[in-house]
Each structure stands twice: as structure tokens, then as C-alpha cells.
Image (cartoon, rainbow, N blue to C red; front, side, top):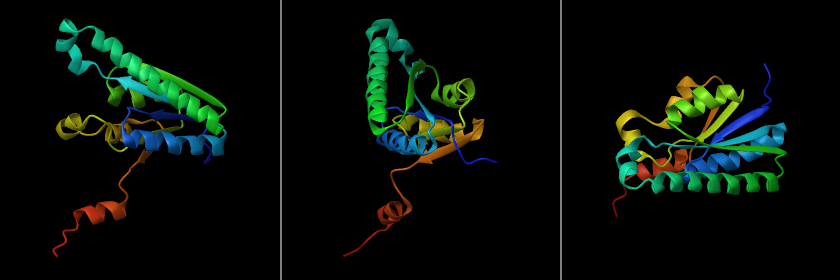
Length: 160
């Protein structure tokens, strides 16, 4: 068993936890001299009724994703990652990241944030990161902003 990663896939959606996952993936890619693949999945399932009246919103979603990815690519290259690829793709993040792209790219590590921008979907059917962990063909690193200490402090009620 080897502890070296060669092809890393990091999922980004513009959230703070995805940003933290991206930054952590840079360090891992540099230490392992790995290829860094950055993916942004545009989930258009909820846009169907809107697309009938406002078709430009789909284009705007793709432009946002492409701009986000280009910024991340520049940052990773400037930080010293030797090879960076970016992908803006439509679909369900739960399927596309771990089932499709991880296999297609032969990723040996997926890095993602613990919770992204879609809090409603998380509440109704579970998080994307949980699904990635369950269905991934490789190792998964789930990055959190709230560490154990911060979470414990938040849950503590203080009376003064």
C-alpha cells in the first residue's frame, strides 16, 4: 500500500468549506507531485422552471463556474502545482464527482468541503460529501471549517 497520491480531484462550489478544501488540496498535490483536477458541478435540476422564462441563467451559472475554476487554476499554478486541470460540468454533484469523474480521471484522492452552498438539499437528502465518501472508488478527504474546539464552544451555553 502506498501513501502517495498521483491524481487528486477537488470539488469546489464557491463555499468557504470548498475554498478550504481547495487550499488543502494544493499542499497535498505539491507534496505528492500530483496532478490537481478541480471540478465545479453545475446542478441545473432546480433550474428547469426558471430556464423556460430566463434561459440566460444557465449560461450565467456556467460562466460563474468557469471563472471560479480559472481563478483556482491560477492560484494552484502560482503556488507551485505542476499540472492543473479544470472541469465545469452539468449534473448532480453526488453522481458526477465520485461516480463519473473520479473514475474517468483515475483519481486516487477526492478532496471536498464538509458542506457546500446547498443547505436545503443537505437537509432533505443528505450532504454531497457524505455521498462522495459512500460511493467513491478512492480515498476521500472531507475538510471542515469548524474544528472540534470551535463546535464545542458554539454548543456551550454560558450564563452570566
